[in-house]
Amino acid sequence: RKEVEQDPGPFNVPEGATVAFNCTYSNSASQSFFWYRQDCRKEPKLLMSVYSSGNEDGRFTAQLNRASQYISLLIRDSKLSDSATYLCVVRGSSNTGKLIFGQGTTLQVKP
Amino acid sequence: ETGVTQTPRHLVMGMTNKKSLKCEQHLGHNAMYWYKQSAKKPLELMFVYSLEERVENNSVPSRFSPECPNSSHLFLHLHTLQPEDSALYLCASSQERGATEAFFGQGTRLTVV
Image 1 (tube, each protein chain N blue to C red):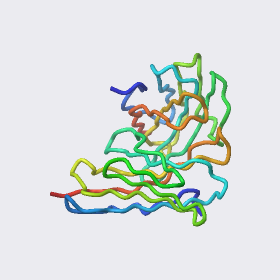
Image 2 (image 1 turned 90 degrees about the vertical axis):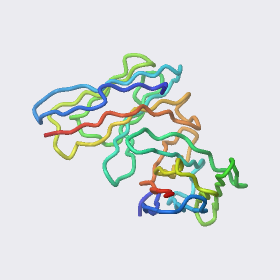
Image 3 (image 1 turned 180 degrees about the vertical axis):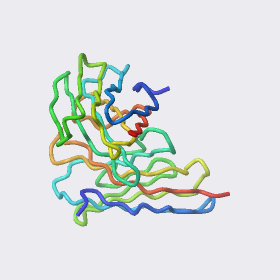
Image 4 (image 1 turned 90 degrees about the horizontal axis):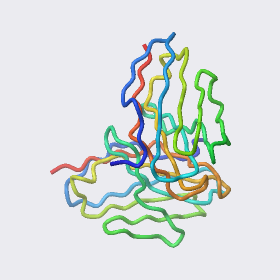
């Protein structure tokens, strides 16, 4: 089983749509969770951290379910500029644990 | 403008060549990393340096040899690579080894012929 598993997509959605990505992780002792964004031929950049209580940043909402070892990212009112690959990232079981990346989910927002 | 700069951006090398990738961070961070990103695969952590000391080597073949002369610079020396080593090599840095956010360079697109 992969340490961090994502549906690679691609997800093709029209502008204005709401889209949700899911991610599962295998290590129940994982400490921290993140979503990174990677544009085509660019480097990954932190989009948002994911907190146990769920958190929102504008049109983006991240949720964590520790019992199910499941993380989600919801994007509302999709923009063309949201087209990118979204990487689910999990930190291992210690404060210095390495970041473990999922394969990424590709989103294509169309006019 | 990224705080982590990688050179070269693209590299084509033969299997018998020796080349080096360079990474420089201007963020005052104490931890630096090399990752490999192959098509349709997750980023794979290769090496971790904390305060210029290698603290992690994730079973990387010896044909990849990292060097961290100071906290701002990180090199990846390459020799006798294989075609399957063709990938995007990303350098990253973070404030400390367990910091929340890692900042990535734009990567070196390596092709081994």
